[in-house]
Image (cartoon, rainbow, N blue to C red):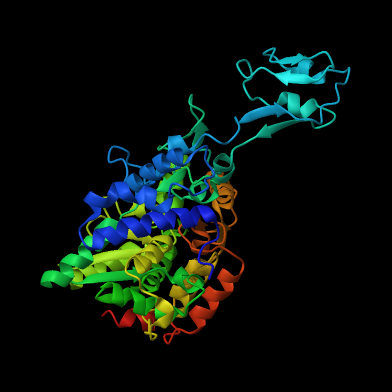
Length: 473
């Protein structure tokens, strides 16, 4: 039964599972040092130089699972000790160098960084090279390449550099916490902080004295996850974990679609506010366009606010595919409503920490939202929902939406808008390829995910946004 895309995810899951297992019975502190040895026993083969280094790295993983560095505001952290296997980044000469006589690479290098051995093969002096790339451009054999690390390739906004210790370093002022680097790092050297201990504490306290209810708010992309079980069993598993109520974040999406379509018609131009990584990117890279960001909170925060207004003493735990949601939950305008954010990876760890086999459970129904709220999970869904919101409210507005699938498409649309050449009046910004179904916290990523989301949307009893939202009034 394959639950994860990669072995890195599986390793991270094992740490989460064991930390959670001890947390349930209040024995974590006395057992935390045992976890590395449990996961990597003495005779186990390891990808590292020795079992001791592997365990040392596991200790760092455990710290991040337990909340990470409190001094670092970013929810994404680098484990320096684990980030030492990638080759140095920058321009390098490959074996394709033929030792030609032209030496164009040498001629074009203004820093004198190119030298040659006895066979005329080029070499680059890294102490002089400034990574301008001119040598690569003029090489007739394309023998010089720009070697980037997987994390740098994954980060399309260039928030990752390499420090003096040859480890990845994250520029917090640029980072949007999208988690692309987390998913793409082949050594698991970059992780998102976990708030799994907070969620466990909420549940335990609510069970003990019934002071409050704990709500599990699940993202609509859950329909493309946990493929080894039925969605109704996933919902039943949440109840078995101790959550009092399970509610769809898609209902918040319906609320946002209704309000955002009205706001768009009044202002004439808008960028979406649903994806926190996109919103963060607009603020850091295109501050002049901040005025156009929708004033609506995200579906997560909108629905959480409704829950807190209705049930003031409650706790709300959002569960979805998004690491950036963990950062969003720390914002002053969101913090009062969302108490913790978990990913689907963390939910799987929670199930297994309590030995809950969801495939054995009877199905429970989850039906709070409309088709349009549910399709927010994939690229283009928000634009469709805004069009429907305009239609249902009888608003005469010529919608020209541009769904941006991934941060590179977002950048292009925002750049055009900044130069007043964008032929659209609504930018749907999704930082992850495919939308939320491509989030770093997903168990699995794939082409089937979009079809699963659309299927899930069609199964909604409420076919209209207004019908779904009306139950809240």
